[in-house]
Length: 336
Image (cartoon, rainbow, N blue to C red; front, top):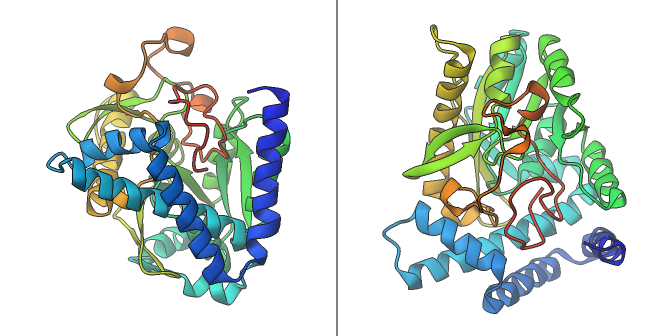
């Protein structure tokens, strides 16, 4: 992307944050749906990639059903963006009443035990809203990771936005995030990672909806090295303004095996939980990029290594305009 393109992108996101949050909510909802429907009708790369991904999730779906799912998926995706633009202006009461989560006691008990907790999520519904609920309703701060993309001004917007919601945000690049996350966990803190898509090209291969994909090793390695609980979380949208979620039982560290074997087993277990949640509500899975290895263009992994270094293995929540350093389909937009 050129310098002009970067400035334009940053300006558009800035316009969204400054303008959409001022609109009456019904107007913002309708606007989001209209933008989603217009994008869906254009049948651009993002929509076609979403449909191709959904075809793996719902293999029995014919063309008509896939079209319905992709339209619902684009509406869900734009609902995420409209909520994100408006979320900084929501009251604590509004945030607390907009999310209901099952088995939250697993998180609360883990934190009370002082062991540290890792929450790992796929790109379902609105993880920013779930994070804001944790910091406001539960009063628990947490640390997360964001992919550092250009323009820097846009990355800074996302960091400021999330820090305003009570999150500590670390850059994905530079190799330092892993050490900071480990320190937070050893101190009994909370770490939240979006972990269904590998950004390092050196993640763990998993079986996902019947084919091979790669997912970040970070959550499993952090759990092994720090003794923290690794809790999968899945989300789904309900009728506005509600979102629902579930905290799943902890992914246990295997009693035997090498670190690589343990990491592989734990990441596969995490992928299985993600798959169950995605299969139940596929329209809320905002995966508009290539994910499965068969869909990725041939390219030598960075460094040529199969195993990720700790700093490269962290699941990241990228602020993404483009998925720099990963094999993007060129759609140009990505949910953070």
